[in-house]
Image 1 (cartoon, rainbow, N blue to C red):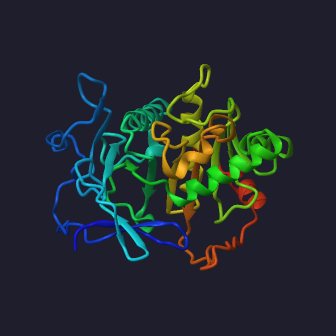
Image 2 (tube, rainbow, N blue to C red):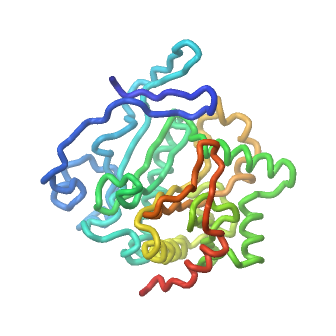
Length: 328
């Protein structure tokens, strides 16, 4: 069966179905190592000359492809379409055994720059409604390669979680004329008990209703709905330093995690699902980074009813994370 995307009419979720290519990974050299990766199409390289430090290539076994036909079709009451989109890999370092949190602040800053560059570039294609940057770290998180990397996907639909956030942020702003994420930062700043670390105007905190133990959000104190367009004075090097410290703390607690950059959808396409959000999007949404750790011990963190159970209070999690020396 060829790959296709099917829509659940009840939850409105899109699900990618089909068989990906099967490869025998035994004794296969790492496709991201210098001397090998250069044979792949180059989407972005830094620096432009000399030995590369960050490189972006198409995913070797992409879920979505730019050349695919969207092929929207109905099957009775159901909707489906082809996997049109983009799927890329950001290679965070040429060093095979170095992890993101082991890089210098300057090197992490370059990774953040690459994330923003690919978000901006892919949003130029009006067919793509949403562009995601994410990182699956560790085998428990479904990591495909051990070489430090993150991924970018561009889709012709908006992920359900993002749609929920857009709707909730829109309603909060409509009722209060304030950004809910700015309100969160201000309250957490006052209370302090769920703050893990601060660097300049960037905050790392355990959310008030953390879904899993040690869930972490990184937010900028100053309002901005677009990660890929830092406002003047944002000083992303501070975010790089904070992210490095947070991941070094987390590495001592959790063997794996999911990291996702939440940014505003592609406003070049003003049709369909996003029509109700355009008017206040720049005022009501706020980019942030969510990190969902995966602990080795089985936890009842999720149920079929989407009611989460978290055995560790966010205040306790933040206290434990603060106590960890990220430089030890």
